[in-house]
Length: 455
Image 1: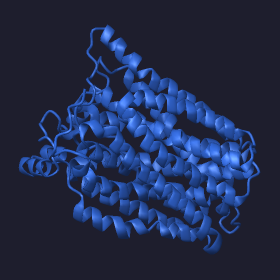
Image 2: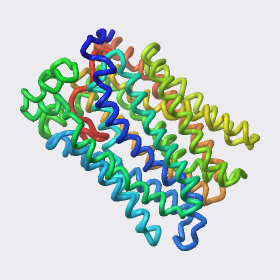
Image 3: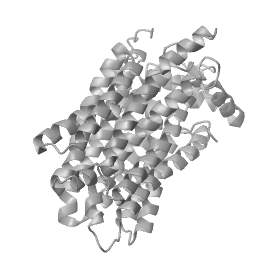
Image 4: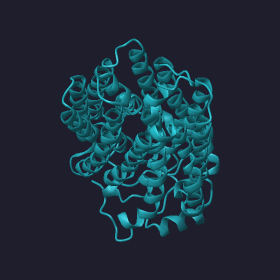
């Protein structure tokens, strides 16, 4: 059982850090969803010459850029710390948005999305790790859920721009709006974001590590919880993921993350176009992206509180099943009001199912391996993020837009099965004489990116 929160370590003490990470992830969500929000307008732009198959490929370029960015960030974070990497990430995806806004052809536009992906790659898991480190132990899932509401608020902002700015001024101006993060978020992060005590200790800066921990009411980090330095340290951390007590649970977490991110990025990229192909109007089709992100905000709040009570694994499994049911319902052409309702409730389950996979890693790995475990769960899951937009784009190019809903339903069922088997894998390890890692007793220590330890 997690220790009680101390008077000096509460949600109030984490609030400044949570607010800064919330802002960064807000812009992350806005950038990821901008493409889906304006894609119907881009496909109608004869001057750009964008086809459905190419559009799907470009969506995968973005997520492939995220994977490359995560691999790079995994090493850079060890050297320079979390705050500089976070600032660089925001700057990169803002620059990528500027390239997209001025692109004269699909190739240059794709290069801009790849550049944006490089910046986006390390941002989300980096913010998750920061918040998990600073959060009170008994409010870990709730704090994670609060952070992830920002992604969906950002998605709603992108949809709002797609509904208002794109028809009036053109889709390019929506991407110009994506440059705003460099102007707003970067100065705030440089001035106000604290460095991780775990990173400071790993860099040999014990005094600063203790001062930061004391300032935010954290327990002082120990060498056991701090990340090991150098390539050998990262290799040892990866080996720990396949220790006898977690060797079966690790691939199950990877599979659940693969299915979850296939859903998240497949839906974010293609939902408006799929609904347009199903016979709904342009405004309604783009509005569905707004509605599903609104559902995502509600879902994060519900999932966080529910997981704190019943466990992240149970919540994630149930949420995945409900997502699959929602995707199948969307395949039927319902009335507009009924479709809005289905999209909204599907958003409640879809996005938080994946976030609860992240929260579940703390029940599988010991504290010294949780940062690396989270990095690999998110990093391997990115292959689903790459596959999803490409696969649905290929189906749409062949005239089978509605088959995308079947793909999403299958991904939901796959994620549910994988995450539900994690407790069985841990019990199997116990039966074989290995003690599974205890439940989380504190925040995650040490730097984490989506592929921490992979390089």
